[in-house]
Length: 289
Image 1: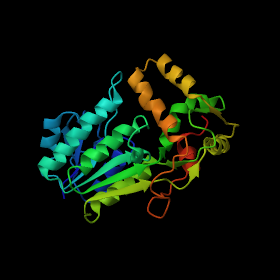
Image 2: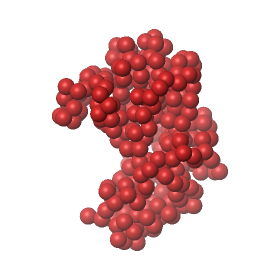
Image 3: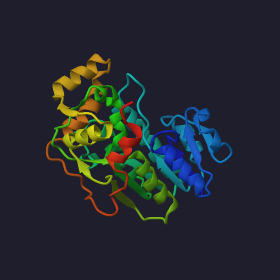
């Protein structure tokens, strides 16, 4: 089976790639810099230099593919994230349609079901719609809030603070990217499915930022206080860091759009619940140093 993997050095893609290799598949890895692949995968992976916004390159790289794992890559700094999503949506839809790819697993997000009003997630929603329009089998993985996002707060955590634009008592499904990779690989290697499916990946439990701060405090052996950052202040901080208005809208729009009573379309159940707890993840990655 010929399986193409995008973003193969990312938090999720790297896990998908390694699981496919361990399953006896020689996956095709699309990436800008093939030299970034781990040395131990040399000869076990077909590395293809590709920019996912380059239609011709992607079509050539996915020719003959039976399955495709697609992630929209981050937009280059200073550009419009939603414009990048739109380009990627057209490219992947053309690849699926013209190459007759048997099934695609798309890494989407909780909130994509809103279609509009959720910042950067609107770009994932547009990609879902583009893939749906091909009529080919597609599975949208609607993932929860990545635990790895907490790494961006490492400096604040050292001072005992966890700042967030999310309401402090708003529960979110927290998920480890490794677990998303496990689900994606299982679906890529599993039996075919007809038409369009949506599968949530919600982690083991929903947590508010107050609860997250408490867990992090226990893991780090210090008091950690969650602090709400109002939308206007959050946007001002992003602007102060040099982000453009489209970038600010994409980032701030996620919390602003999903804070007011949003409930994921897919319920938490045996299919959507994954095992890695925030406590175990934090113990490995966010211990006080």
